Structure formats: C-alpha cells, structure tokens
Image (cartoon, rainbow, N blue to C red; front, side, top):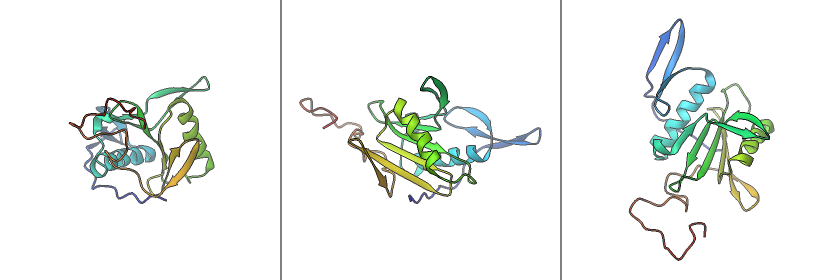
Length: 165
C-alpha cells in the first residue's frame, strides 16, 4: 500500500440550491462535490503540491474508447514528451479497492498505455509499475522528474540515444 499525505486543502467551495460544489482548478469549472470528486480533487493536489507534477501535465475525466465503449478516466498525468505516464482511478472512500477496480484501470490502460497505474479511495492507495509485460506493486508514487522520460528543463537529450533506453 502507498501512504499518501494529502496537503492541507485549499479548495474554493460554494453551496448552491443546498448542494456543495468545488472549483476544479484544472478544468476551470464548478463541480458537484461528491465523495469521489473529493478523492479526485485531493489526489490532484497531492500530485501537484507533494510530488511536484505540473498542473498542465494533468488531464481529468477525459473520454476514451475501451472496446468500442465510451469511458472516462479519472486522472491521467503526461510526461515531458506529452506521452501518458500515470493513470489514477479514483473511488469514493466507501468503495473497497478490490480486483474489479484494478481491472477497470487495466481496461483503460489498454487504450492509454502508461508506466504507472494507481487506484485510490482516498484512504487507501495501491500502485503498480509496468515493467516489460509485468506489473510490479509499488510502495510509493514517483515524484516529478524521477522517471527517465521526464527530464528537468534545460537538460538536452542525447541525440544518439533513444529516450526509451
């Protein structure tokens, strides 16, 4: 299991017609604050404020096609080469992280291949790193710049080497 220390919340919220909304800084929109949205918003803040991922590298709830069906991933983080790097499937805190949740993330992974797959319900977080054709359970999520596909700004790539070596 991965320990996630969520940063102190800095969310803008409002109540309208008796319902609580949160302003999503990535999508620039007010969203109904469901339990799953609470997990998604807090995990995004963890990625940005604790692991230092740029907000511009994060996509939320974008539609993809999985076996001809329209689905939406929760969080997708891109690397510095604009390639999908990390996929996060969020669930409400009362949803157990069982095999079905991992299978859902793996179905999304078939359409959007990534190096890292994370599932979380806000209280518990599990993650896997894809190495070759195998998934290896992780005990931490790599921070920004720790993956070989992410180079700190200003460092040129060796032109004679593939970025995937």
